[in-house]
Image (cartoon, rainbow, N blue to C red; front, top):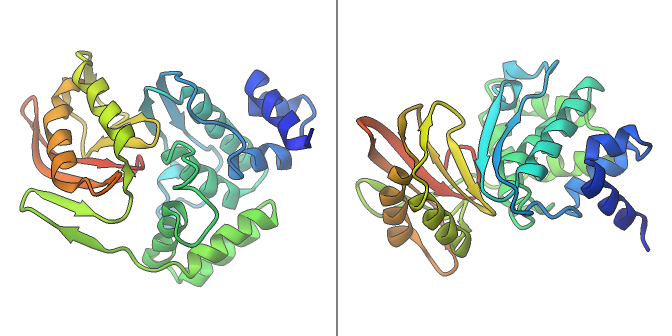
Length: 271
């Protein structure tokens, strides 16, 4: 049996950070996450928070320098362990790793969207971050490369530096369809049905709800029943679904008197 399978079972049983403390190296633990050896979908639900302390890259505009939350119907254990591993990475000065783990977090570990290739949404997202950085992009790239724990992490940033820019396609005045950040349509169908049946009240953060590879997000805090996200979500789904994928933003969505933008996509970060 290959070593990473041993790691896989140990990490599932004890948690990645507990496994690190128990003797499995940090390098092997992060490899299990980055190489998608851990299944993120174990039907655990609740709120997971990403909050890497002692993280000095906030001047580059990274959201992960603060607290970032996701309510999940399917992946609480995975998201919690990724967040814990990022806290450990930050304590060791592996800030490039923290950035990569943040993207694993906001994509809930989806294998396709976080694959290590030049066309995955994670790599394209990081490339956009490099291009839009207020400082010189090569400066940010150097910081990330020099604070990465291994060559595999560095390789992702190299791919991102060469990634193409984002493109958006508009279909309707209140709905914008996107060829990027397209979630699995079946996952979104399940998410929308779960939301429609959810009569619980939501107030404040987190402003992201996840079911496997699909997310509903909204632009600002509001107080409302979760099921109120359903109508705009279905409109997005009906207008923008192409093949087995869907990604869109609905503007002017009313949530119990609050006007917000609402997204249906493959990540918990914008649309």
